Image (tube, rainbow, N blue to C red; front, side, top):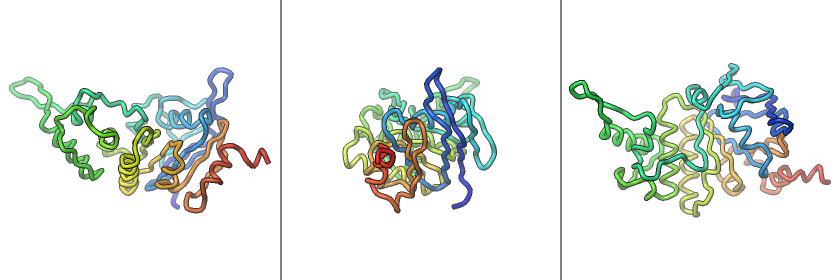
Length: 251
């Protein structure tokens, strides 16, 4: 592989007297899916929140394209090309997909000196991004988002992230949680589609079946530290579970 698109080095995060992360390294490459797995409390979410600017590390550095970067907020991380789709999706269910896609960044037009929402253009852009970037076509862009299936809702949330041309790293937090088999398969297909466009995709998941289905490498967190990084094609569920629970230490 070439140099990592993202490097995290020596990441430590303390909350008062509690150490959530201790000296964690992480590499993510363009055009790959890196899965992060581990038990609850292993530090997965804290690590990702540092990468996306929600938290700042107590110690350690982040590099993007080999250059050191730091984010004081999630908005700053987005400006640098790093965004996340969290499990909650952060969608307004009563709004249609186009309104969700541009929520907070609405497109406008000016008529006779007055500014109006450009609903037609927002619908056209939403339809274009869903089809061109994700290969998804919704039956209707006028229905409220709450009427969509789980996989379609994921598509809208992903489309909102990839709409920004500068996006380079997409974090997905438990994207298949509470989805049925068909919707899970559709969501995993979306992840592959994003990966094929050259983005680095970081997938947090408790489902090892999904991880082995779609990831290229697996980063295992245990008790706030990296327990190991393995190539998915060269590993199996038993090896990953052993790293998660510390089987070698127990032996």
